[in-house]
Length: 149
Image (cartoon, rainbow, N blue to C red):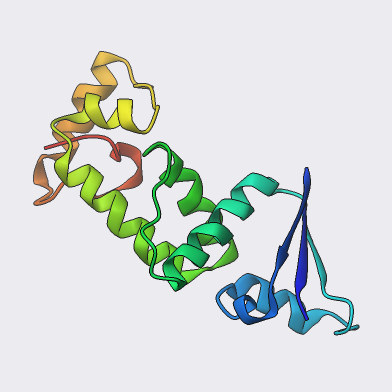
C-alpha cells in the first residue's frame, strides 16, 4: 500500500516499497490508528520539494545520474530530505554540496551558486572572518557558513 503525503499545495504519492527510505513517514505511520488509510499531512512542506526528494531517491535507487537544473536546488533538497529523514538522499546531496564548496573559488562564487546575498555589513563580515581564523577548515559553524578562510 502506498502513502499519500499532503503538502500545503498538493500531495505526493510514495510507493510502499519506497516508504522505508523516509524515517519521518515511517514514524508517522506507526502513530496512525488506521494502518489501512495511509495519509500524512505535512502542511509546512511544498509539494515540489517533496517530489524533488522522491524523484532524486528514485534516480539513486535506479543508479541513474540525477542532474538538477541548478546547483542552488541542492539547498532545498537538503532541507526537505533532512525533514523527511531520507538518509540515502541526504548522504548524496551532502557529498554534492561538499564538492561545490570545495571547488568554489571564493565566497562570492558560493553566494552566486546558491543564490545568497551577503547579509553582513563590512564590520560584521570582518569580525566573522577574524573569529574563523582558528578553524583548520572552512565552514565550521552556522553563522559563517559562506566564509572561506
